[in-house]
Image 1 (cartoon, rainbow, N blue to C red):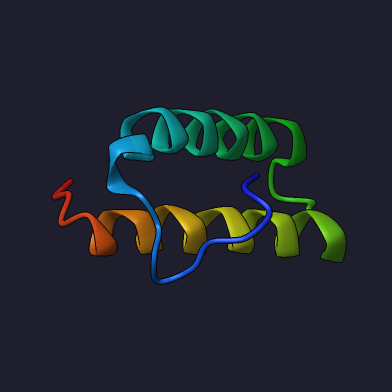
Image 2 (spheres, rainbow, N blue to C red):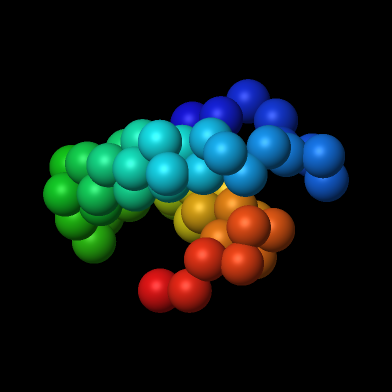
Length: 62
C-alpha cells in the first residue's frame, strides 16, 4: 500500500504502483474471503481508493 497519494502524484510511477496495489488487493481478497474483519475491509477499501485515484489522475482506463 502506498503511504500517501497527493494531487502532485507522478504518473510515470503509475504502472509499477498499480501492479503493486492490485497484487496486494488480490492477495487480501483471496485471504479474507467473505469473512473479512473490519481492519481487512478498511485495508481493502483503501487499496481500491488508491487504485481509483491513480487511474483517474493519470487517465488510465480499465
